[in-house]
Image (cartoon, rainbow, N blue to C red; front, side, top):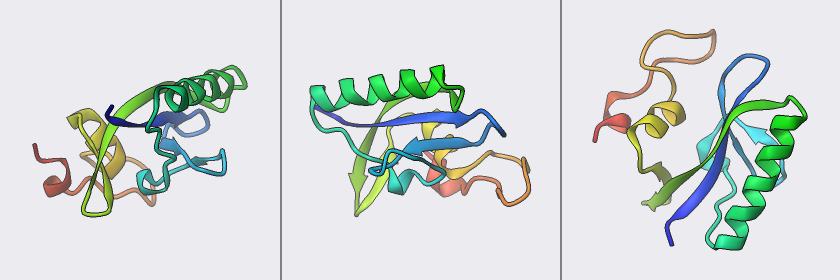
Length: 104
């Protein structure tokens, strides 16, 4: 099974977030709680649905990642862009994505 994490966008500002081991939404993919079993993925989905219903986040999704040299690496380009930041100036404190990180 491929490792998976739960991601969403914060409702207040649209910034990409990942569920961490404390059950909070973090702006760092590297802090994400990694699901390595089907049961763990199902638990992430339940948490995501509740967070959506509680108006904490939108666009909730479980996405595939791999551990590369001690860092989580999303398998899909869309998720690499979301993890690194937008490809253009977006919001104060969020620089554009590193092209090497999002390169296929």
